[in-house]
Amino acid sequence: MKYGTVNLKDITVIHLKGDFDSVLNLLQGQVTSDCTLITQQLGQTSSLCNEKGFILCNFEIVFNQNKWLIIIEEDQKDVFLDEITKYLPFYRVSAELLSYKVIGFVKKKDQAMLPNEHLILSSDIATLSLLIDVDNDYLNGGGDLSIDHWCINRKIMGDHQIQLKETGKYRPHELGQHDTRVSFSKGCFKGQEIIARMEYLGKLKKETRLIVHSHEKEVSKFIIIGQSFKDKDKIFSSCLGKKDSFS
Image (cartoon, rainbow, N blue to C red; front, top):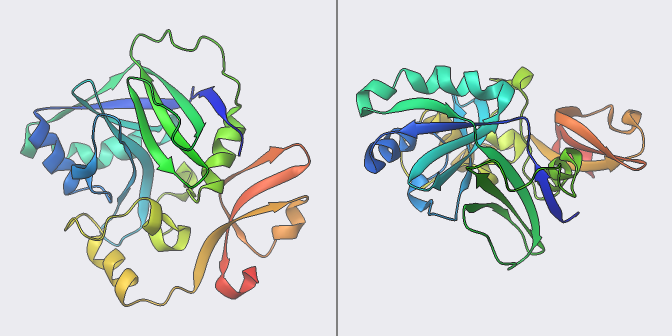
């Protein structure tokens, strides 16, 4: 793990505008996580899936200064908006893009949080959080972490995200997202029936793990999920393969 801060420049902030309960009810019926657990400083990793349980996009949800915000990669925002927009009128909710800066923090466990900072991932040794910089003046430079280090840290913490080109290709269990992005206790959401069947009745044949290697040819038997990132002479990849191929 590498600790520090990074300006997440390729992130879009979407404001779901409406009264608190309306937005909450909208999200609960669509996204994979349980949004009732979100607080002012506790955000969530989450996903949208289609009716067959395939992941359409990954993102974070935070409640910041009385606003429900979706924090998503710039190139995936249209996937989210296209899917959610058809439900907005039923809840009297609208969606607008905000020009907020988003700062990523990687901290040691139990390190204090700042106002407008939202925890999204936690392990025994580290936490990952997002600070919503409304005035865009918190971090003028790039921070002391690179984007690559931020993404590597997410992989180390078991969060294997898809890219735009992988929309609709994988279900949460294949990528380990059933542990990081899915609630099995909140009730129905799009794709929930198939995802729940995989959780309780299915036998998982493939899974995704982080592999650290020196050459791409070392993982040629795996499918690379998302993007690989380099740190010095090592390459960090989220690799999808048969369970027995990781032995």
